[in-house]
Image (cartoon, rainbow, N blue to C red; front, side, top):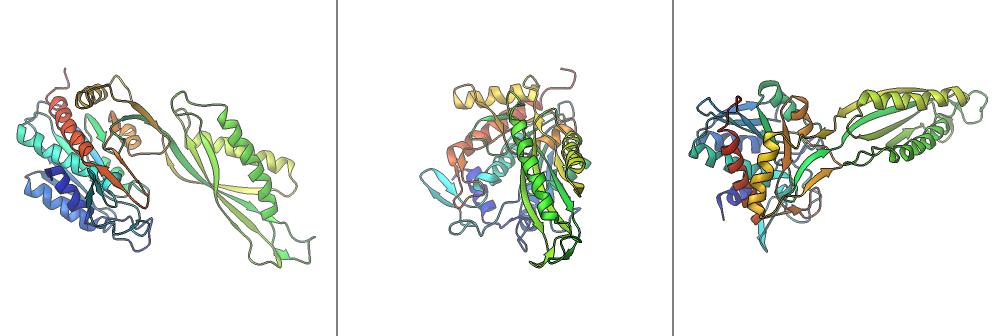
Length: 382
């Protein structure tokens, strides 16, 4: 196996399932220990960030001569559940030019590629600083990248999520809300005393469906329309009582130009309209986690270098894609770091079988090395 493939196999053998997704899961402590030792052995400056106990993010830094631009490679070390994998997800099996195992595609393949690329660039010599951020918790709330950005900023960044050897320059954001519809508890035999919160919630669900249809008419030219759906609904205590409350959790996927504030305004308009037109309708709107959409500047230096070096490796101009899901690119962009995303080919993210093509692992590793050496040799005055 190549050095990148060997490292990937070692990473797959370490359980790093996210405990915010699976109660009692291993988390990132063991894989963080391994990566920290790897950086130390290869003479990187090492930083362990662990605001959340047992959930470390590891940053390895190769300092340059001081005259070049700095670049951050970012990737997450957590995975989804092992329980959903068909077989032993911690056993890296190679078959038909592919390596199978939980996280092989999403995204330990990218972690291995960026670690080896940084090591090779370090040995070649470079002017600007190279930051390799192996972060916790991307599969849940992304507090790993948030913590890294509290301490480190660079001139540009690359997120090495799997992208089928294509280049992702935009993706949607999301915002979560809880809507509490208020009723009045009463015995089921006393309708004159009760207000049925679940029945009142039905008016909101119908309005939510109309809102979703309206969003389809306002698409972004690249990402398409924003979306909204009800995710979870709960209410009531027992069959013999009027429910005093019904809670609906909803998710709104956003496109450029939309924000948590703009979505909240739209939702309040819908809910206020119901409060004015439906008898005894009252509500509380509770904002939850929000993440911005992302749109890279295709003319930025890092975008141009990525397109050129990946194109050289592929023998053709890379396909540029837009993603319906969210990534840590948005956090780097929000921090003022020009960035984009590209990574390995394969399949099976979050699925029962997951694999990465070993050819693509080598392409990403070599492309990253070339991008690093090119970008980190230029100065901010160029």
